[in-house]
Image 1 (cartoon, rainbow over the protein chains, first blue to last red):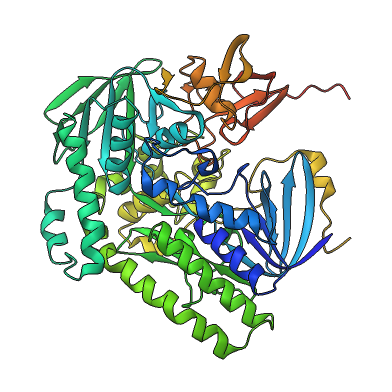
Image 2 (tube, rainbow over the protein chains, first blue to last red):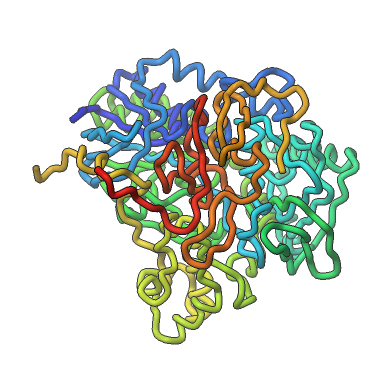
Length: 456
Length: 100
């Protein structure tokens, strides 16, 4: 068994910033991460990026973060996946088929975000991937889609990736924007007028302009999106149009990755602005369990810079709670970080309103649409189970096997909650969510047997 | 299909996908190798036999499950491609060889 003071899960901007600051403050710190190199998804494979990369300067800004981690005293464990965690601070991680048991005095979950599921007809066809997946292929393997490519959905990442694909010599054939027209009016009221919000806003507008001036056509207010094909994608159809396509890239924003926190039964709230579950946190990232904190997009979607800052706050709090600094020192060091966080959040309300997904993204109307990709359970199956008496997601499992496949409900969770909410005429907050269980990732029997549990 | 972008990193890691040799850059995942090799699907679901391909590329969706170096049920998007790695599609549920 390995003992550490501070164990951090996830080496994205939040986890790296927390780990390096904690080590600097004298905490015996370990950082575990599934990927082979630091950066998380946003700065994935950033250590191999070169100037002039089609991914652009904002991506390259992650390189110093990774370098700081490498230069620090943090015990960094790449290629290491968390498969179980117990509330009093025991972590079970697997690397190269073996389990290591870690006893930590404090844990920080910096598990980042996942892309919101986009349940449309045909979204399980080969040829349909997420916009984020296309970006990961570009970051890690220098691969771009070949043939005719359609981007559909909305959100800052959609246009960023469109621009990166243009730069990488693979311009999309068309962008189908699904932003509901009413969102523009809603967002106008939240338009940031202070300078802190204006700069990122201009940056976003320039990205959109760059994509348009590269000749990529954009269709606005698209609804009724379908992917059609036999064994793989052949056409993309929407209300009033269609196009032959080899690739369809979907995106409707990102939501916190709450899988581990739900398994720990941390208190979670339904966020009505960002339309997702998020853990209930105090201003330092403290959760409802005494030794566990959350930082970055895993707590609330705010982007890479805010993630880095919230990671630093969590590290300061851990340093105080473990006796390395006193409260005055923590608060003094936190002041400039909180000020920067405030500036960074200036644009967030505007983005949340502008890119609020249509209700049909949360809960598809068409009964035939698959919601649980693993067990191939449709929206109609879920509605039928609700009529038969399924009261919530966990009972729904017994009716349909929905959420019981290999992904353990990671993808279908938010969709199931919304479909059940509509069917039972209750708010999503009341419907609740899955209770995931360990192992979080597939492990061999041998790796299970390695675990040093408290009872042995 | 996917292709390398212009000015890509040299693809120096040889991987065998369903008997087909393909080279990917260091750091690419096994799932990326499958796509680079020109396969559209990587598995068939145990439920209906429908064809699936990597969807999220970040360990969330499990639609990239494949047999890697003889071990079935692996998330190919989370496994870094290594020289000589053998990747096979997974048809239906994974099979376990009962021999000790």
